[in-house]
Image 1 (cartoon, helix red, strand yellow):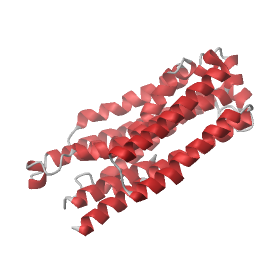
Image 2: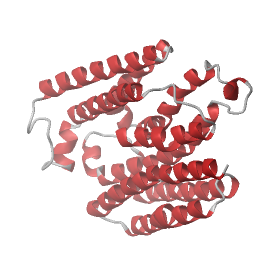
Image 3: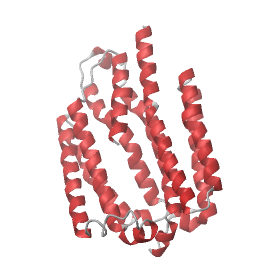
Length: 304
């Protein structure tokens, strides 16, 4: 998450601002506070997830279970509260620093969503998958959301006379957010298929349980197909240049096709685990496309 937010800031937002000879209003210190807020809250979310998954993990992953085996449930609850409070404090700090303190209330809401995700949503049909995927996509656009208010208040003629719409920063990061949402959505369903044995012991109603293996496979394959189609659409309509064509083909579309093949052939828990890990790798490659964006912006600026 920290890496993704740094990439959005230094490889997408800052080069776009340089293209218009603008300086960032969202400082590196602000970014550090934002990263701390997100990482601490996410860490607290992982802890509370393990807290509620104690019984399931005894079935699905007994060798790597931490809560109960390494730390007590009461300690886990304390860690969750501490990490979440610290994350909310940093979230309010960065929101106050840029003059939109009300945005700080987003962080307690996210903490609540992660709590309900772990305790309830993840056991329900699709709700948990959608919630965590939306939050994953949100990480990609947060730096742009925090940069926009400062630009809107800027006295720079580039902003005042409309040469640069501050929301262009958001649009640039939105593509990464959509890719993160789709790929994480598919990965969440694959993980449910991997953990189906333990989930059944808690009478969970995940998509993998409700629709069965065949229905879950059709759903994941559909999401992966939509992801590939979205990449092709974005290339043809917004990113039609050779480096993007090569990167999309080699680093994203080809791995997605290979993943789809492996997923179709998957039958056992270890097969789904491989697909889950490989999709996480593809998500990383999606974030790394920001280097191509940076190169294109800086090359365009140098040409003028």
